[in-house]
Each structure stands twice: as C-alpha cells, then as structure tokens.
Amino acid sequence: MLLGKVRSFKDTWGFLRSDSVSGDIFVGLRENPHLTTLAEGNTVLFDVRKDVRGKNEAVNVQPLLQVLEPAVPSRHSGWVRSFTGSWGFINSPSFSGDLFVGLRNNPQLSAALAAGDQVEFSIRQIDNKTEAIDVHVLGHGGHGPV
Image (cartoon, rainbow, N blue to C red):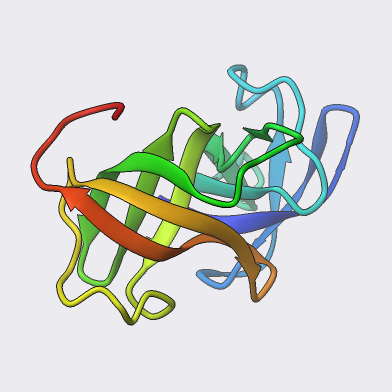
C-alpha cells in the first residue's frame, strides 16, 4: 500500500498525490464502494492499478484518522498495529483508522516499536501530515485496545 493525500475530490471522484507515484492518481467511489466520500487534504493508504485506458487508479483506499473528536485531549493511549523498519501505524479508541508513527520524529524511543506495544502519544501535523509524536511505550506484546 502507498501513502498519499487527496488533492481534490468532488461528488464521487477526485485525485490523489503520492511521493511514490508520478502525477495525479484518479480515485472514485465506484472503485472503492466501502467509502462514502473523501475530502481535500485527507491522508490515505491505497493500492494503484491501471484502468482500461492505462491510467493510474487508486483502489482499496483507506483514509487515515477519519474522525477525531472535537475536544481531543493532548495525550492519547493506543496500540501499535504494525511497525516495520523505522515506521508503522498506531490505533486508538480516540479515533478511527491508522495514525502514522515514525522514529524520525520520536528520538526519545531507544528501539523500534513492535506490533501490540501499548503506547501513549500526542498527535501533531508535521510537514502537512498527521503523525504520532512524543510516543512512550507503556507495555510490550499486548493486543488490541488498552
């Protein structure tokens, strides 16, 4: 899966941008029936396939951080869903979807995180991307919600 942002979206279709793909990537609700809409600026995970004309098309689109409660506390708890190399994703009861977490913006972490780690963290916009920062491990090897 690739990481990208919704460049534009109107009615039932729009375009994504990703550092992994050159140019715009078409995204439509017909090819992603699990979605009801997208909004400009949404961060998404997606796969790319060629449409019948040979153009890039986004499928299996998964918005990250679909909904944050309006009064979000500054610290959250959650668990590491996956972590490979120097980055991964956190889930939490505070939001639906995945939250990106990387070692680059968490220098206090002395080692990589592992799936199932229970964590506490803050959420910030960094380089126009939503990311977990100030991550602290509360426990290792748990599964699911804290």
